[in-house]
Image (cartoon, rainbow, N blue to C red; front, top):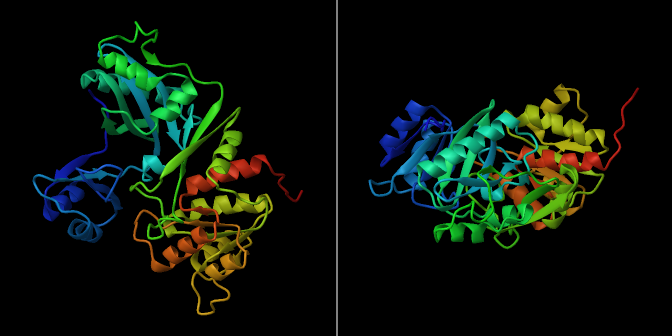
Length: 383
C-alpha cells in the first residue's frame, strides 16, 4: 500500500529483542503483542534497559512475542472510520494534545484538528481509505498516526470500535455504532445517505480530556506514558480552542488559580522546552520555583527563579512541605524519554495527587493549560 510506518520487528526472547533494537536504533517502543490498553508498554533508550524490560516486564515466547518498534517523536492523531467494503466514511480526525509516547486513552484530543496542515489531513484520509479497503473491513475501524516533519506514519490499526466513538459520534451527529451495524448487515453508505471520504468539519471546537482516579488508585504512579491509566473522560465544546480547553479542564477537575507558584522539576532533555513554558507562566504573573538542576538552567537563561528542594533533609522546606502549606499551585514534572522515575519524583507526584494539586507530567498538557490562562490574563512587559 506504500504507507509509511515505524520500522519494527517481533521478538520471542531477550536476544532477539536486543538484535531488533540494534537494527532499528534506540529509542524503541516495546510491548507485548497480546495485551490491550498499552499494558507493559515502555519506551526504552538503551540496551541495558531493554534487557531489564525483557527479564522483568514480559514473558516472551514463540506464542507470545514482543513487538519492538522505532519510537518516533512526533504529533499523534487518530481516526475512526466506517466502511461498507466499497466506500469509506471518515467522520473526523482527532488531533492529540500530547505527543506520541502518551497512551491515546490518556491524551487530550481535539476535533477538528487545529495544527494539522490540509495536506497532512488529506494524506490521513487517503491512508485510512486504503487500509479499510485493503483489509476488507466492513463496519468500524480505528487508526492511529504519528506526524513528524509533515510525514504521516501509521502506528496502529484496529478493526473494531474504539473508545473515541462516543466522542466523535456526539460532535459530528453521526450515529456511528448504528451506521456500522447496518453496514455489517448488508446496507451501504450510499443507502444510508453518507458520502465517501472525510465528513465536513464542525464549526465548533471540541476537546476530549481524560479523567484519572489516582486518589483511589494510590499505588499507580501518575506519570503519563505508553500504559493507559485514565478511568474516564469528559469533553468541552466552544467556539475556539482555548474556551473548549477551559471547559474540558474544568470538567476533569483540573483547576489552576490565576496566580501563585508553579514548580518545575524537569529532565535534562526537556529543559529548553520547559524554559519557554516557565517564561510564559512568569509573563502572566506566576512565580517560578524549580529544583536544583532545573533552576540552574533557568537562571543561566536569564529567568528569575526560586530554588526549592525535591526532598530535603529539612522537611519543612522541600516540595511536599510547600504542598502541605498551600505554597504551591501547580507542579510540572518530567522524567524524559527514559521512563525510570526516581523515588523522589514519585513522592512529589503522590503528594500533589493527595492534596488535589494540578500536576503535569507532559509539557504538552501544561502548554494547553497555558493557552487557557493566557487567553484569560493580561501580560506585563517593560517598554
